[in-house]
Length: 232
View 1 (tube, helix red, strand yellow):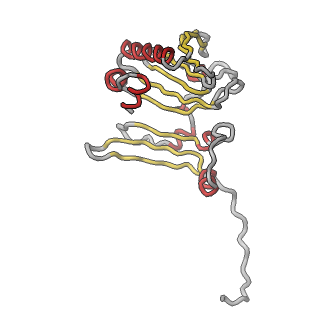
View 2 (cartoon, rainbow, N blue to C red):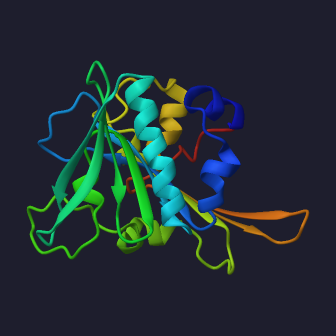
View 3 (tube, rainbow, N blue to C red):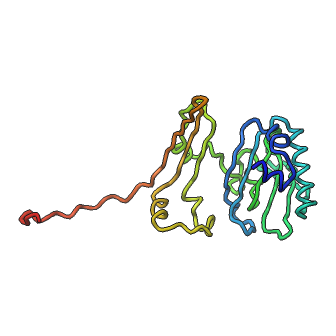
């Protein structure tokens, strides 16, 4: 990762990124907002809680210049409106062929975000859900499926992993992914997967893994055997 970052952007992983990424972060795949025009039906989203916003801003400004000068992206300032009606400043990177929507900005005073793929920035901005037509996505913490699947008993813990199998493998999301029949049968039986990790010592890490299965159909009446038949 260090080498790839240096070769593609010229940035140093420790000096330019990790020095202000000392707190929480998340990586997510988010479905596109219904009605938006995009060639990609989902977006990859990175959120990082910055411990030094000034250093983070300097790094993002360097990235803007690199994407513009080296890769010929169109880098523009813009605004999006959150659910409260307030305007938020963002930076949009438009690649030369315009196949992806890339947006970066700040969710609040210290959480930076970067989305690649479908335009979903409006859906992840914080704010109250005041309008049924609002594109804002519900909080993951309020998701019943998340609470049922992800183990939360470990305290302290180091991280969570969660996948809504039905949504991720929906035909309109990962339509290009071909799953072999045996694996597809297994996926069709799973609703969700949740993992919580905790470092328990300087040599061991604990993983609590839950798999939520779908409820099958009620079993029918078993056929009755012929009591007069002799076993073979």
